[in-house]
Length: 325
Image (cartoon, rainbow, N blue to C red):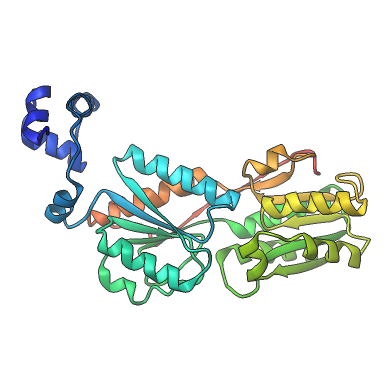
């Protein structure tokens, strides 16, 4: 079995330099990094992660805790986090809580015992008070906690404003918003605040309908949407808090005989792939998922090395116009 010394001899470098490449410490040129990885591949060398974690106190691993892996938003976010981490020489441990509090605590403990460099947390309900004693960086995405290391959010209020303005500009007079979960408070709730402000300023009729934790966990909103649309046939513009919900609006409209965009205009939120492949494609608020993922990874790595990171980072959103409006 090849050793670190064998790798160093193969690429003509010192053991110290090879170790710095493996542990991602200090400046390493691209040429040197390529030499080391080429030698590792040739010799089939596998670093001893356990030994490295004992010597460093942490591993080059980031824990990622999400409430869903089926939801298009989280699938896209996970993919971008993994890409960003890989570029920096880190791996991820993916934990899917499915909204269960006991799982969230269990995964936090597991990440701590596995000496992760830090944790990226998407959960809305996990209590992190006990976790703060571990000294492991905790970066939250679309959630802010006072005792977390840092938070990354998009400008949700601006997103709600852009959606309402766009529907009104398209001639809509009776608007409906399908908002977030009533049982939890999240930054995404600001989408409804921005939406409501614009509706009031423009003197249009509007209604905001909240979703339930059960609907969020099952990802099934059809019954809620059908009830809302049949309750008020005047509705001519809908804003949903996710593209997933917007895609189900299209299904419900087909079922009850409402045409999009002829009878009503529709706009979603997130700009994930599903918004581009429906018929018609869905206008949406673009959330900078790639940039948010990269920012979260950068903050975890920086904080794990003792560097100061901003407590709260807010990234802008933008309007993407497609055929549903």
